[in-house]
Length: 86
Image (spheres, rainbow, N blue to C red):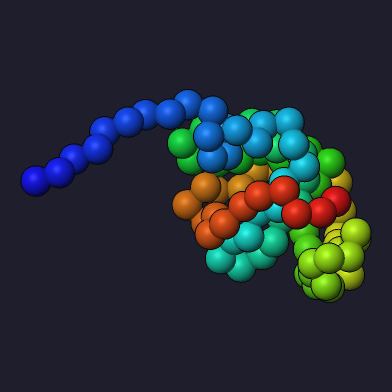
């Protein structure tokens, strides 16, 4: 049996703290500044929901609806994430 056990801090969502991220979730796409993350949720500020991405190489979303306050997203609903566009 082969086993690799290694814990690396500062990777994944933690490594993107302070960045403007895009969270592809099971139902919606969220975009905002990642200001907090723990085992159950990610906190976004200056954020919104993307209803139409448009072409990924374009600078802006085709349909982005800004949320009025900070928003929490369950990490269990996140399928993929990264820095994509504003």
